Length: 610
Image 1: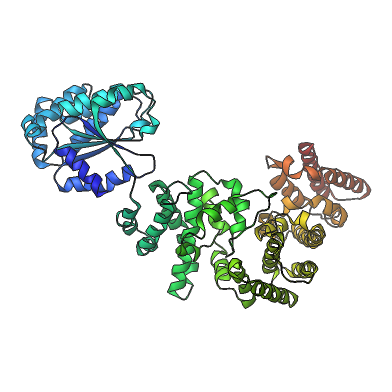
Image 2 (image 1 turned 90 degrees about the vertical axis):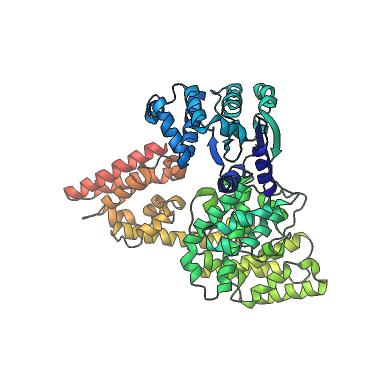
């Protein structure tokens, strides 16, 4: 970076009337470096540095007008120059007449104005107060602007007539096919400097100046991290635009977790959890910016979540996923990464979807890094199984099975242990003799029956813990767990419907937000659990509450057919039963009215699903 500053200064001191080109790919930090380092440096030495982007301009006249206006504005900051401008303004009327509604109708006129104000002699005899114009985004100028004309303007008006120094910032790979650019470039540009940012300089230039305390205090740690992956042959370098995105994402997520982080008693824990958070953001943001992951990869990324185990084995029939790619690219490269990395679905969700739920982040982090039970730490010993002997591995596996038998794991930890045994079975490294599969089945069913959390996605949960497809790997176990799940769902739906018809709003909102209507066929349960007799076709009924639910949660949903098409038959049966029982029951006119509304809404829903 210091070398480039010196190159620019040398160019300013030279006599030639040509431009200097600084060329580099998008995101490498050309603009940031010029705005935050070069311009300030030149101002200290009494030059007139002017930054101007041509991005977004649709015609050359407007571009010229705005550039000259910026030159005038910069020159007017100097008191001596301001007097010259005031004197010259009498000759050319005043600034407003030139820069007003019909501003710069004669661009040449204003260049003459600047020339007169600045003085031929000063331009020709000294470079102490040179006007240095940085023209950015040359490759992004509109197709409506002829590139040949733009370069001609730079040569004739800026370089030759005003004797300005012009530094062109560009990504020539985006314009290298332009014949006009090739033809006139040699007349305008004498030297091209390739730009690539120096990762070793980001600490002083960016990190130590950042407003976030963690970024400032850990600038050296972050620089080491960036340098490590900057110099990796396995993937593209980390450009400044990506680094800024990482820092911005970190700043936002940290602010949402600040209260929970500050509840940690020890400062070293607060620092460590922040490092874990930064590393997670670093990986996911970088992979997103590289185009390697999208929101479609969220389910696969879950396999990295809430664990310290980052190893894998793929048989010849297994296909690679983003999980394996990330492990190969980032893990076991640098100790400061492996010591603190922790992946969270909430972080990935924010980066890929813009949604962040901070409810369990600190809790899950604590559980992974400081497990309550010492038994789970046996799993950590398996992380580096290649350094173990057969005897050591067999003993760890024996202890884990013993702990499983003694019910020392909750359901999710038990899935984790099972997943590790599943992976070791695939590579032929389960060294104990007993039939551990049946033990796991028994304990998983028992533990799941004790779980209080409803609606666990079993396939997803096992997948995250290392079992690719529990449905096909252990269909009997999967069905037993689903039976428990189904009973839970029925209980929850019954609770929901009882609350609905009783107009008890206490838990309805939470149950609706949990997706209860998407995961359950309430029409089937209403049919078979006596709700029609008790709440719908009865005196002083609450059929209107069911009617309101159908209108708000079904009829107003644009993709209702996609979500509820399998419930059509039960809706038809429910309509038949209600109509039959209404014909057999004597009710008041208000009760009939409420039932009539309900029937009409059910008929409308039926038509939508058909």
